[in-house]
Length: 200
Image 1 (tube, rainbow, N blue to C red):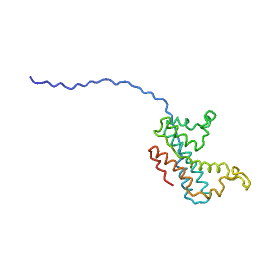
Image 2 (cartoon, rainbow, N blue to C red):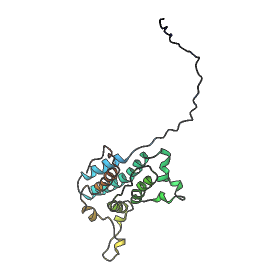
Image 3 (cartoon, helix red, strand yellow):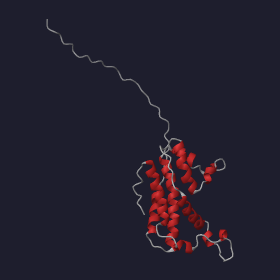
Image 4 (cartoon, helix red, strand yellow):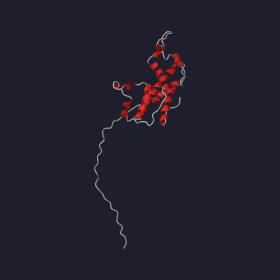
């Protein structure tokens, strides 16, 4: 007896009603300035060795280092978490991290990110040279270099950095400190540094 083929069956049904409810999205906008500061510092490092070029290079390199650690950290977090690492001014009474120095940010924030599981390795960075850069920046910004000088005053009250101190620095000194720190951070984590970064 021949085998009968069973015809294919198609089952149709009416549409299934579904509804998705989404809350109102929050749009965050953020600017990036680290690259601009870096390019400014590089430009000054190549602009000559007079004290004015060195002075500007120091300021721009310090601004780059300050901005880079913030922007790099922001990339590792949910956007709302950035205030946990860089508390905004209104919270500083409750959180002394608001007043962290540049050196303290580079020392502490990578460690805190590691402890929170945001990065897989704790970077062990040599920040001693960053301390030198911060000292020069601090003296320039807070006018310590403009203090009057005399032979008999104590070292602590002498101007720093004076023009003579700036003239002793080689062009590229400041930007190299900041760039080396950033390259070391990425190397430790096995990451590629940002494309705009070039060795000074």
